[in-house]
Image 1 (cartoon, one colour):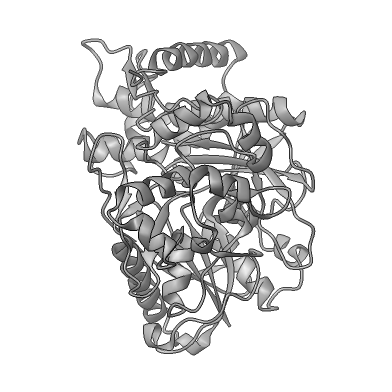
Image 2: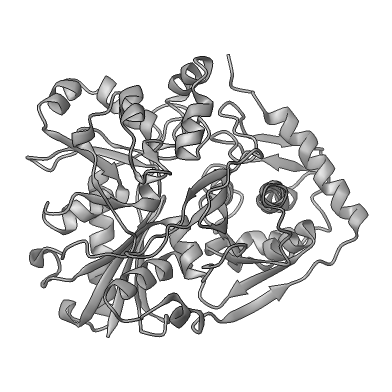
Length: 496
């Protein structure tokens, strides 16, 4: 009995096959193109997203020697906020996917802020006004693609986040749906009614008929078209990547938290059945949902650039050949030599929410080398996480005794030790780092009856390593002080 998880990320598509004990059996990963048509703009080709995901699904099943009929159920997890609009009759997108990192709609958000609409939107959605979320991206597509508004009025266009795009294509156009976690990232979903909000739809001028049905994260979403992989496979789970990772880390109770180190960095804490109205620059959003179970909420700190900063070292600066090299480089020098990187390449997320911040590299001297810059890059990931956790602890009154971590960059021991040092708390890494895919598998397996409850899942969590603080309070405070000086210099740089 096998459970398949499709993990559609910002820079690659992955498929992982799990057994009934949550252990990965086989996985395949395929990168795809990042498109930057103008400064601050980020796009993906929706067709390439779909093809890369389908190819990894087929390759993974072949590697595991599994037939489609050997798969009990399939779950989907995805990059959030990224939006696609397509023609319901032809299935063709009318524009590229606009990615969550894209800053093109900052002027739309700025006008809403000037009109004093921020508090109303935050009260309804739990989200601060920012170009990060989906609504302004959808508005931009409808306003800028020729004939899009008329096609929308004629009922020709439908839209959704990446999970919806995958579902629609996997089911041969039979399922146009999303789940509560993805819906809650659009700035069109009301956290209190758990439905699309008419006032917000009017505000962003988005027809309700375009939007998908909202279902629980663990539910029956239909079956795959048999022509795609050779047989129908039930689809039983959908969740945005960070809520899926929270579920995969078994953070089912209030106060339990995890941090995922991927393209961005996302720290989430389960706050139970009551949404918290943040005053510390955090997001209030939905946790993964199950049919018949009470809704749960999380507070989240979203860091836009984490692993993407390491990719920048590799792809743009070309001072490393692979991400794995950064650990040895960082350890080859005793410190960063005074170098501080603020990787605000697409603005700053929590707790600053500055759309106009830009990347800043400070403290350079003639003796600065690539090892210092690599070390400063890893430290920037840990320092951004410090800011978010500090805000989260102030917001909730909960002081974490440990932080669970996952995602590709959590395999970097230097980064994890630095994180423990800066947070002054234990950092706990599980054996299965692909907890995003695991969460999708868990949600699908629960819908299929493979497991009966979340308590069945806790027994599968296994420890890989624990990192404990090793630096003095004085050293910690000095590094944080220099970081905050650098952040001040990065803020507002791109504002006219």
